[in-house]
Image 1: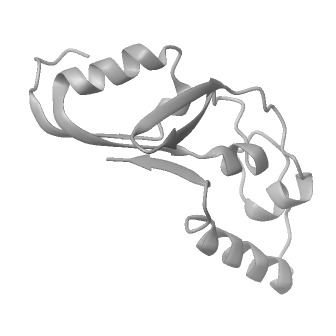
Image 2 (image 1 turned 180 degrees about the horizontal axis):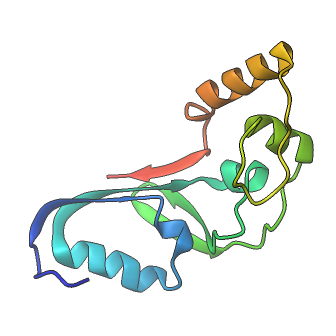
Length: 126
């Protein structure tokens, strides 16, 4: 990164780590340019049920250690779940469901509201 060492007090890397080629360089550069920071990526549960072809890595953590693993998942575990989660949305890697059914709309709303609170849906570390 084109910044001086410790140029920033805090850096935020939100939904970047899953796209990188070299995790060591990624983490080293974050540590070099900032005194502290926050990293967030999709977690293993999200990569399992809601994968993206663009995600090169699955990111997890144990304590303060971050683990980057090659992401081999190239399709959703359940097409129905993927399609319902992204109900009536375009621009995703896989087929979504198009429907005005009120029950499906409620299920979509509910899933999207609770997803962020489920364990292992995101990897977050400060």
